[in-house]
Length: 168
Image 1 (tube, rainbow, N blue to C red):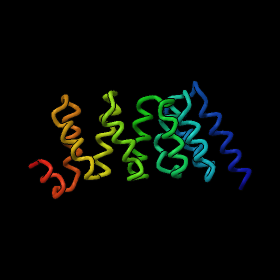
Image 2 (image 1 turned 30 degrees about the horizontal axis):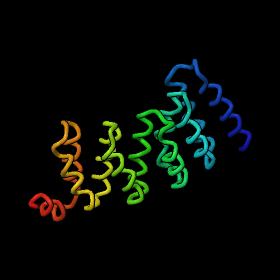
Image 3 (image 1 turned 30 degrees about the vertical axis):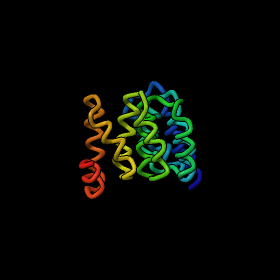
């Protein structure tokens, strides 16, 4: 059986090379990950940070399988990642790591980069921490996308926490 797995990996590796038709290449990359079994997480990390957009796309679909320390490692390397990859890591980390992401989400929501600010606001809504209500209320009056996303984040928070803050 080990020989069969090694043969499959060799075939997938050949089909996963640049120059292959996109559909075949993606299927081969998926096959490589499945054939690796428990060691696939290292490959997911490698591919997610690679310059190869096809490998990044495949790896992004498997970020959920990373353990918390690997996810934290990706968070520490956010600035090295392309913008769409950063957003994927941030949102997955928020759902997986929960409250540990609150300082990161607040910092992003207060930042100057619109794309990261919107991601930070979405994360604040996911986290649902009432301590962020004043920040979200301040951002309601912001530019169009910021105000809308802040409103959506507030809508995710418990009404019992939001209503009194609105009345103040």
